[in-house]
Length: 190
Image 1: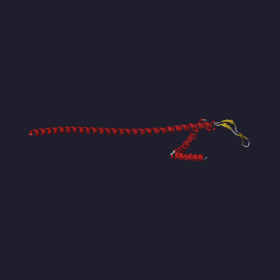
Image 2: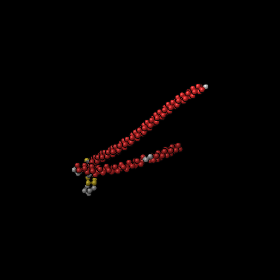
Image 3: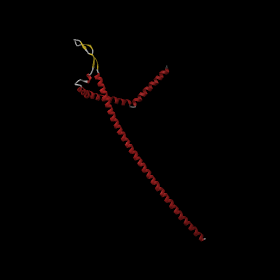
Image 4: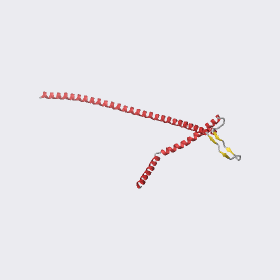
């Protein structure tokens, strides 16, 4: 029993630690922002439906609002005193159609909004990729220029060393000739 309680306590601590991490990541804040934006978006769509589309449909149907469209199964029965004795039962297909219209408008609005956002993101990504490619091209050009300069410097150094070797060989040859002459002169003097 004691082990079960300890296990539950550990799970409880782990749950709250995970929850704290979840909140700290910002997911809850993102979700809250999404809910607020969705509520505002819902108000806009409802306004579009209620103030623009529904009046247009009402006009097209000779003044009968889509909200009033119904199929009556049983009429309301009112007694002489005005008290309802039997309530009306009706299938309110107009309200159902209104819900479908609302759904289509919301779906269309969200589709358009998402499409606009994706196009903006795509253009930003293309711009970032173009900037990255430009920087990479500049870095490659700099690396090539540096490599060319280093190759030129290496070639110049090689040529300078070759010339120095030639001069040294020439000096060695002159020195050898000079030493040979001195030797020959010393032999003659003996």
